[in-house]
Length: 155
Image (cartoon, rainbow, N blue to C red):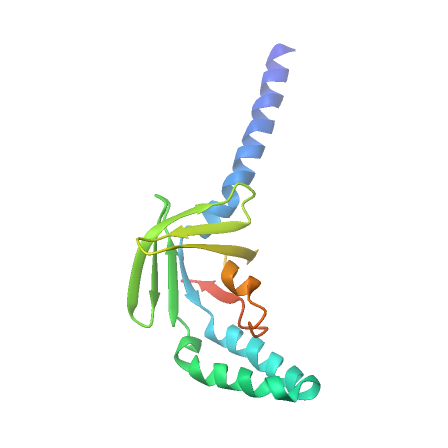
């Protein structure tokens, strides 16, 4: 009977710790900005604005054209490594830092020599990662569709 209880405790412990590691293990890879998905989200928002708030559609179109090079697949690359380091490459500029998950596993905290940024995990699967930089989530001027960064796993 004692062995059965120990076995049950071990199973519960393994289940809890493996669940806790899921988000981290899914994150530990190279993520490429999914330019097409991001562009589609912004274009859908522009179409909505043209119908509902035409005066705001112009600003969204301007932002879309300014960010044209970002919409290429891989225009931004984020790599989260198992040792807690990370690399971000955007428009050929590489930044290195450290990363960790928040206690609730809903936010990635990225620290570089220059700053600290919280990235809210909106969605994560083995092949897709959607992040919302906390600064954009708080910014009321953010254009819907551009507040999220949509990534796909490198193949």
